[in-house]
Image (cartoon, rainbow, N blue to C red; front, top):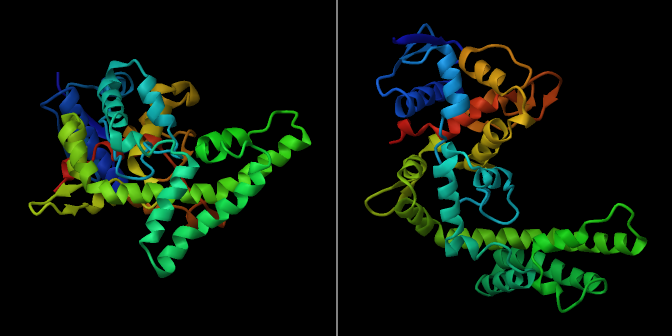
Length: 351
């Protein structure tokens, strides 16, 4: 029996809600009922399928298989040192069949030389890379490259008195951060060492950022092609939405997905993985997952919204003056279910 549902949580405005509506229709038609159809009626999205309201909720909570969206060409994508890899690693550790394609996609990318070669580089090696780049630069560009290097080398002296001098250049930033961690009852010597290492880490992280930028800008085009040629078709659908390769091999980024999957410091793919983890892989961290889904689909009230970035899809929730209760709101509360549906499933609109 065919069921018609009015999804009162899906309106044509803002863009976030409009895209969510299209995403819901695509997911149901691809993964549950190929004859499903949807339409707008009085600013409410309607869907006709084999699923009643309970069935639709069960599908998203228990069966829905997320699109493996990735953007390893972006610096905050979860594939580089210094990124938040909570979502990525939760997906890799999952045994669920619904995450199989996502697991395979992530593991495939992590095995590539151009990804693994930039992970965990020793600080000494990163300094060498930046110095070599600076040797080919002049003026202000050379100054910007060498400034953090000079600061790091100056602070080497302080840290070398507290750590083995010969080991210092061989340590990665992650290893230095571990060295800076204090025990519960730290001695004064341990506090001094931690303070000195943290001072070194400030320019060291700037050096790492430069190295990551050099690596990506040198091979971004190649990495996009590599992804498209080697990843599963479900991931390629996302790539074709985020980056279009023209006949002359130029790259065009449709504005709907920012600049190839990111918007300033907001990386769509890593955000997607983090929200998936909270909602589907660690639901105990959010006991109101079904309430959030009901709010996203049917507009039912919930007190489980979270403060997170949604970017251009709902600019009224970006934060700032007069954006919420009080004089200023850094980030307005949003439904992570909405973010997941938008970011992972907007590619029906690709050019």
